[in-house]
Image (cartoon, rainbow, N blue to C red; front, side, top):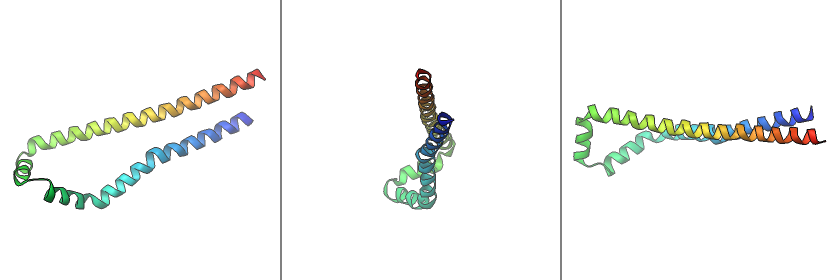
Length: 108
């Protein structure tokens, strides 16, 4: 029973750590993006884009939108791969810790 309690406690701690590592930055980025998107886009529009670049982006919508969607798809793939990697490593750590506990219990 003691091993089961420690395993449940470990799983709860790992769930909290996962939530803090993945969920918290995502929520913060979403809130900041929602709050500052207008200001950032206006800043980029006035300071970094020339008139010819703006004309190109506004006149060539047929090529710009698919490229933008491809970039979003790539970013999502990277994010999903990193999240899967982190979660897989946590699952592996749990199994290794459980194996170590069972091995130690058997040796007693």
